[in-house]
Image 1: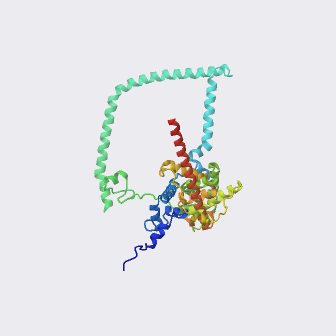
Image 2: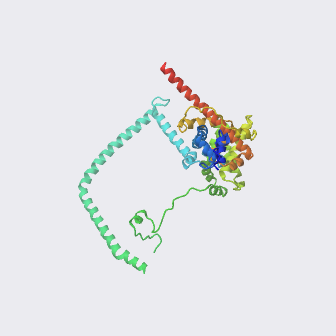
Image 3: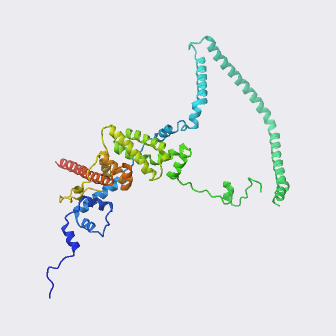
Length: 199
Length: 228
């Protein structure tokens, strides 16, 4: 007896042919990999149906883009401001602590001194003739000092020229002598001492 | 041998002044647990390491919920202070990040409720919506799904979602949290979390396709105008 020409198809193929498209939940589960791909009827349908394949691809792409999205960074002072609230006064570096106390005082003194000195030098800045004579006095003093120093330097350089050769030979001989002394000390004293310590 | 007297046999050891057999071990980053133990032992400065480690991701969550950078930073600062004060009560039933994100979520929810927005709106499990088949409509224009434009559109649309949806999307995708962790952070039932995530992804997809379609139409219009 021959078989009926209309052989029955396997049940799973009938089910797949009856399915038109995936539902939204199935699309998302496929995109997340919750359903095993390549073995499940849904995955086979998604591979064969352009409509469903596109939906799954869009969901996957969206998920990937959301995962790779850049994080929003806080401001640069954020951690410092948090720590200042938690532990006040501990965030200052040494330089700020220095500036906070003695440094400020010193800076003030220096600034006041410079400003005060500058004010004394200004002619007719509310000062009397004594202030301008003071600056003249300073300039005369420095001029004289400069002349004296120039004279002394010239005299000393003449003296030094004649003494240079003698001094150089003295330095050289002292250096050689020191090296000899150190070498003898190392050879006869230090190493014997070490040998004794090793025993 | 007297102390401080090194027998240096290798040239490199002699050069660096190292003892024979000395090795420098690389410094490994401390775990969250180690940092917390240091803080609880009295080293408050160690908390800054914890702040630096978690601040950016938490900031992303806060910005996506509050939609405002300054408010988000304020809320995050408040969250870190609360976390610091509650550190002694942290029992390690979950990871530190999950516990901390719960604090951030609660602080942001409070801020939103003060502005009149209720994040804890309940939605039905919408089983019917989930089981609805895709329509037979013609697929849209072939868009480049991997382009950087797609990425910027996705980020933009996530930021536009209501806080109740953008928060779960951020936790699920960016923080890669499981459903149970999201339940732990938000305090919502599992079914609600799944429903919100499903709805959020659907809204996101529709918004993205709309944006991309718009861009295609604009580009087409420009090309047509150029040829007139």
